[in-house]
Image (cartoon, rainbow, N blue to C red; front, side, top):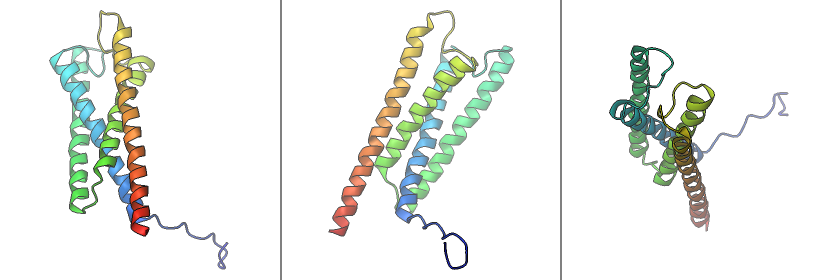
Length: 169
């Protein structure tokens, strides 16, 4: 405890640490936005396999697709503004950003495949077919993106620590 009787203030986070996290978070937002955009454009619009919400009328499905499309577009555009800000600050770490992007893609797709397809039963990938191959491919691809992103972030962390040690030495 400090002399004033209050606990000591938490040490301020380093600017470098905040920027590292920001690179990852901007990448995650971009990954979520871009995979949602691809999902909506390919599976909802081009292939007509499903709507975001298939448990009501076709009109409700179209409205849900519109809201889903708005989310994906907003997330993608917002992440690009944040990406540009990182570039402007000369703080872009492409390894962390790519790792975050892959994590965002995998996490969003896994959330969609497990939560939307299975737990909430909002929609399936496709109707009138054996779902197992589709589910395995969908969730397997999601897990592969997620693992690739985590691996990229791990190697970015190691590269950063080696760079910090080289700067001190």
